[in-house]
Amino acid sequence: MQQKLPFVRCLVALYAYLDIQRSPSHIDNESIETLKSFSPLSHLHGDSSSMVPIFVARAGQDEIPMMNDSIDRFVAAALAANAPVTCMNHPLGEHGFDNQNDDDRSREIIRAALAFLREHLGK
Picture 1: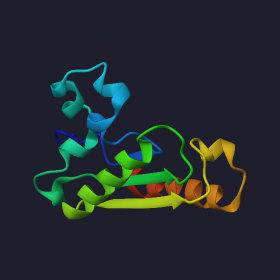
Picture 2 (picture 1 turned 30 degrees about the horizontal axis):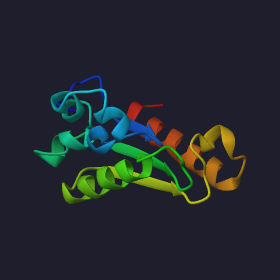
Picture 3 (picture 1 turned 90 degrees about the vertical axis):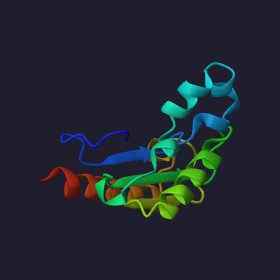
Picture 4 (picture 1 turned 45 degrees about the vertical axis):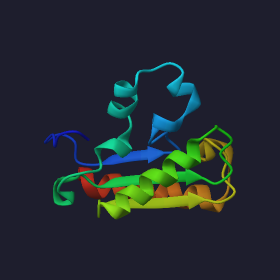
């Protein structure tokens, strides 16, 4: 996300840490510079027209500490930066809902993620 690369046409994050700067497990093991460098949230600045489209899926019942907090901060910052972000939430989904929750919402989010990839990567 630091620079626009011609071969990166979109980004997809399914229940992923999008800001490790407040994650205790990351803080205990990394420098401040590394935390900032590897936090996608840190790279939401500059001209939003040069940003690649981003698809974010969130599991409402994710039990991984600070996971949803990091996603929520990222999505709020992406919207504030007017970034091209699409966010979908699975209110009852567990971490790994795409293979843990065999339900309609999981299938809807998976279909949307695949359609997003087809749209931005070509058919």
